Length: 457
Image 1 (tube, rainbow, N blue to C red):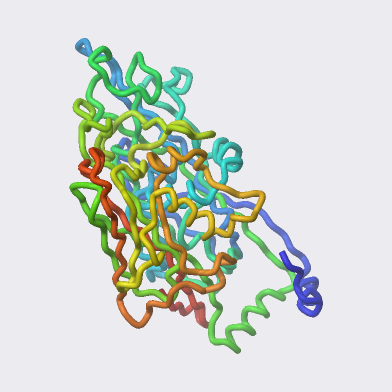
Image 2 (cartoon, one colour):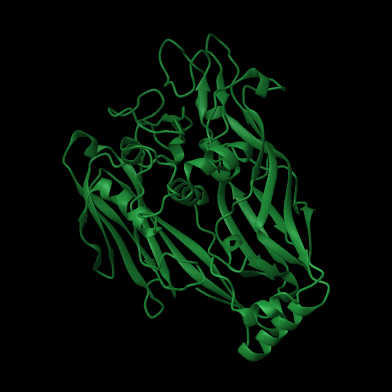
């Protein structure tokens, strides 16, 4: 990080009386959520008249999975906590200030989180921070994690990374300048919960020898929920004076943050593609994914895939280090894909059809990791990329601080975005799947005097 110019440092050094503390926030509606708790929504209000650090915002909760007990000769089905913990259970995450929506609340949020987390967060972070806090790895059922004998895991979780407005730059936000700032989460159905059959090892499929009970009756709940966030203060009023000066001279304070969109289509095979649209000041990245949507726990497809939307054992990841099991809900495959290309208003990106393995190279170069000795992702093998984490993308912005609004400017028209896929004609190409297109773009929140707001997408 480059040092600030000396004349700027002089004023920064005048900020005296700096103090920081962490406060606890309670949900507006209830401290419980999830299908098993009878509530699918959580809303929390940020502290008012305070300077908060959005990067410190964290949700604390206890996950309780409820499985199916053995009965009538059928063995038990255990409910496991999914990989990704609380973020994987979120269906929609949206922000609003004084009733003004700051984002479009994309659905499903857990797909966005899985793509960003797997491709951008490194293995060392996943094996330390995330493994301690937010269940980065699926573990097998242990009776010690089931004190109430509900045939499911009970784990304390903390998620301290939320996508969208909480990624804003600058991350220190003076809520005194804003109307009431609220975060609302819609929670997923029980289908995202992976299962384990009694008498099997985690990840083992259903078999006639096990005769397990009905998977669709598993559920989950979140209990003892609360939030924490850091609150900053300065005693000499310099920051307030600087904000007032900026608003009086420029008309508004500017806060840049990412937004996401997801488009999907049910495809009868690997070929074809999916289409979306965007009208934005800065289109930064476009991603493509596909997840299998055929088969049932009793009759999986010839490739062994079960519909991603059904409760099932977590999928084993081949040729990977660090992570060995993946949620079926966010398992993205390249089966049957020969090559692909993105198009924006019929302009091709890249200028050629890319092969599946080349999609990972595009991830590496877009985040400027090619010549760096640190970084990386959670994808530790070629087969893991192709069979479990296939999320090719095209980058349209400069790989730098997100305050550089350098993506493709599409404000003048509602642009058409395509992900075109060519089938390889093999057996796997015929498997039905859901194809998804995801966009990442920059938005600008302009904060004027009198708590007036304007959102520029």
